[in-house]
Length: 385
Ligand SMILES: Cc1ncc(COP(=O)(O)O)c(C=O)c1O
Image (tube, rainbow, N blue to C red; front, side):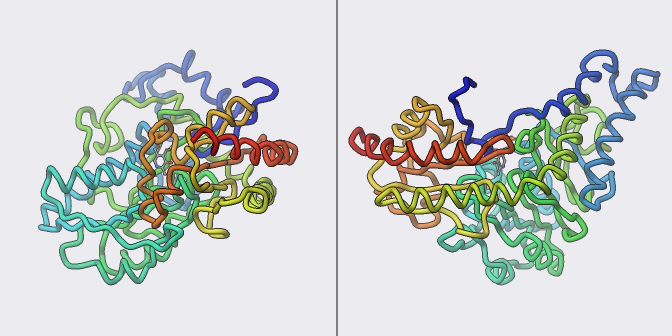
């Protein structure tokens, strides 16, 4: 990043916290042991692994044995859906309820389960902000429902779902509730006691941790058939030699992020709201996507009529602003986002989406510079679209 480049894409990924990097370093070098070895090196690695597990578990009021380390949010979502659905099928439960605004890691997994493994997939309704009404979940759960999966905070439009309420309803009906909290956990604490039949997916690189590591928190491991078999790591729930440095990094990042949020979240909200009002006031034919208040504190997302988002992103990049249109995986894809489709955005608008996601290092000055530049860039982008 050069001096003039402003990074506004923290929902795609965050920079690694220096303290987190320092916590990881010994496990790349001196403490290189395999957690499964019984000797001194193995014990050092094992103790770091269990320390990391306990750190994450304690901060969400969970028992350490509820944490399964994975290679990231995508794997956690895959393990939750495939692992749980397959187990439930043994009891003739083949009905899966998911929201239509899931990250592809959940949505595509659910679709694969329907296409190749005979599950009956039902999408829940959402309102125009992409939020699920708990009553709709309650009405749709039936005796054959294997699981419900609803994203905690939507990555493209920032809206937050009532996950505690959804978890409570599912628990009352004895149904497993999974939530992809990959974005949510970067901003809000989680209390696992509110998820008695729950599973929660996390990914470290959204909270200033390393890429390639995540976790699935599970209330009941017996509700899961492992998707990766081999060695007995993670109590047989996820085979493969532990990536000790990354796991240590994840736990350190999670802990640091919780205290950083305490001091940062209000500042972030103010910057976010300044961006939202600035854009909507200054740019004709612009709309906010996602809920105005029930949204991630760092997340501002918009649609602009008759504008190709890829052109706007290129102009923004040239002007020194790193933003995205929807999710990172979608950038460069000219198809309208499925998320915007599912909240009823018309095609005239859906191709012109912009996501601006703030982080710890962003300042008021960054935001003001952005607000000065954006109207002209949108105007030019419209001429080129
Ligand atoms: C909501 C959500 N779920 C899952 C993922 C995938 O996580 P990972 O990149 O750790 O595989 C992402 C990443 O963009 C996300 O935003």
